[in-house]
Image 1 (cartoon, helix red, strand yellow):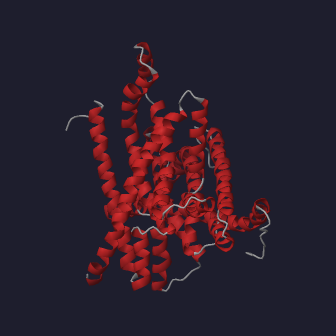
Image 2: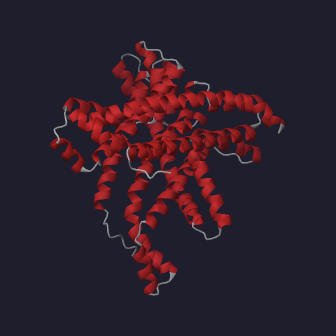
Image 3: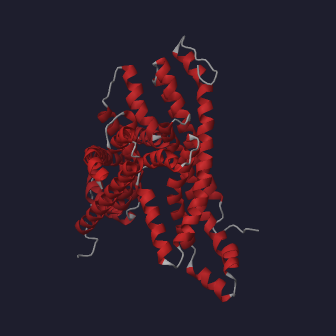
Length: 220
Length: 230
């Protein structure tokens, strides 16, 4: 118990960084998901190609390779990113590419009758997308987005390898200092697990609210 | 110099060409870790899936908790845990082996779900028919259920194989000389990170694009009605 009370404050500092890195990259990743997912089904060939290239490159290479590339390779061409910027950028770009496929799939899965009805009512493509397709698709995306958010939390541990002082970095530092391996790494795993449970609960709440807003869910 | 191979710094292209053979040394380790980790994930995952269906709650619940815990915590921290904690208990092994085990354990949590979903997707009527025909449990599994579950399980497993390969660079954190680590070391020694890291990215991209094409082909070729085990 004594060791626990000494270790916890230091780990909690790292936890704070992990939380904000995860939040920031999940939010930016969500924006990227919508941008790339919608671009992938746009009528413009150039946009489709660009989005396709982005999705394939970031899904097809390893996240750690992307982080190293942003952190070690970019300074060579004069672009020096801090660990925070490189970490958030890498995580966002990576999770955004996975999310884009979810967005695309969910929009394409909306009942074609909805699309036809919008056309019959003379909606512009923009109105069809924003007022008919997206509100229904978003509800379908939420469970997968929840999984991706947890995936992103787990992936955020990799930023410790580009010297960003997150929970994993703190844990490794403490382990080096105190050699109390089992309590430190065990506690770290538990903290990640609790965070993941919190994200899962938060996403389920959001999912219910969105379903209600879309007139889908049953009132509770 | 690395693995007895020299690099050529005279121009960017010469440098790129000279480090490809060195990186291929790392690729071999990447592939070995991927294959071994995948085999472990397949075996351990099956074990977990079976344990989870045991009617005894005292066994099934803890197993379900372990699966959830492993799935929700980062591979990197699990890897550190194995790498630094096991020696405390007198178990020392090469970093490569620890890394492979970490990959296998993390992905067994995913593969166990694939097995479960694959078996559950077989229509109930098939179980009932096997029962009505008075087949033994063994024959029900061997001749009815598993053959129909295989076409659902194989593509999902193949996708996890690709994911495992993309996670192998994490093993560089415990000094395993896989492809990314080799690229990083070349960068550290030559102060040229861009070229080796880009080549590693391209090699990964080539591999994943080819293998996702292979998965799609496999998916289209697997007979929906099942594969007989005889």
